[in-house]
Image 1 (spheres, rainbow, N blue to C red):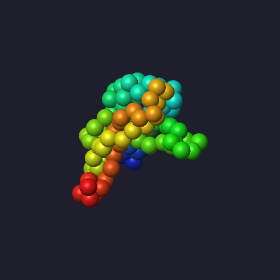
Image 2: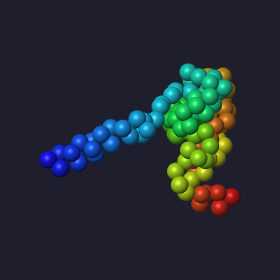
Image 3: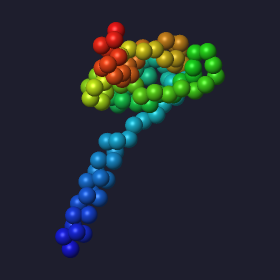
Length: 103
């Protein structure tokens, strides 16, 4: 009986934390730069898909509101991606602290 209660408790805990692990995905060709930045600020971390500069490949990465949305040992750094209205929309993504030390 105690095993069943423990297993039910673990199951309930894992279900309760599942939405926190979800991350939204957006295609930047559908959003303006301002809309894209607002999505990142509101959700704190999102996956953005976008076309590569010199090829027809679709790229994607995780973009964040600030360093607090990065894992431990990482920091948010500015980068630029294409959106519906701009070829160089400024957003942040996470980089290892070891990259920061090299700069």
